[in-house]
Image (cartoon, rainbow, N blue to C red):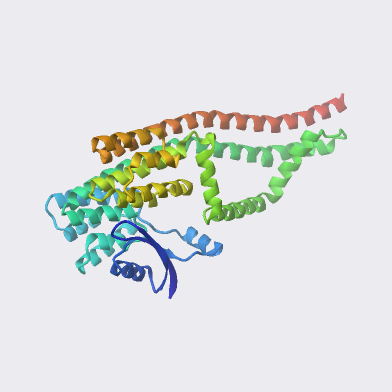
Length: 404
């Protein structure tokens, strides 16, 4: 038996959390479903750093977002064509090449042929997001599963496009940063040692900038791997601690407050939150349940904490726009469009429009950041290389002065 922590929703969307001893995650999910709860997340209890590191190195073998998008769109098309669910899943399985996705579809097929509903089968997969399962469940209950899958596919497509654009935009700065590091390593470990013999053969006093640079080069050559391993271990430990509790919340709160991020965390998180909630509402879920599920997809923990009063206020019958305004983390655009949606009775549509606009604003912010990042990295690279070469030239000039 092992300890598992779980998060679930009741039929009204209220959160339920706790721990339970069980032989497997599937047993906990079955127990939650039997208790009338909707499983959101079931995972093993808190791991130590060595166990966390081992799992991280092995990988989760989760289904990639691109595969989940393909499966969703293909299922929607096949179900609209009139095929039943198990045959559609079998066809989709033959169209997918990745082993992790194959295994997922095999498990779903097995559960569905055993009499489980599609949503219940998905709910037993801990790596699938909560909004995905809830959207499918709403489609099954309303008898419009193909339409729900089509809306879900459009939601996933939009999210995938945004992530792809961000990753593509970061490729050039990443290559430039790696080039800077490699250039400095070559100068320190290859170029500088060639001058050390010259300085040692001369009787001239070596200037202090040259001595510092030579000592740095020797340190990199002699202790480089040890230093790299030490920094990697320290980085892994710091990353694990930041993701474990109060440290992560403090860092996330700082990212929301500081002006150095140009408001990018708020914009991205608000766009994801509003898009998820509006998609769930259009799919048939009531607004309180949609907001509660959308809250689970927020990555910034400080932003997630600010979203809790919004969901609680909606559950108590308060309007959405004042709650977003009082949270102090949502962009003004989101607040204003939510108010317009409430006044016109088209809140889900207006929330989707707000998410689209915020996504466009986030891309503009990223472009501005990259516009600043590239010349800064270039200038830093040039300054560091010039500093190293200048220190060597000072030493060479001192040797020449002694010769004359």
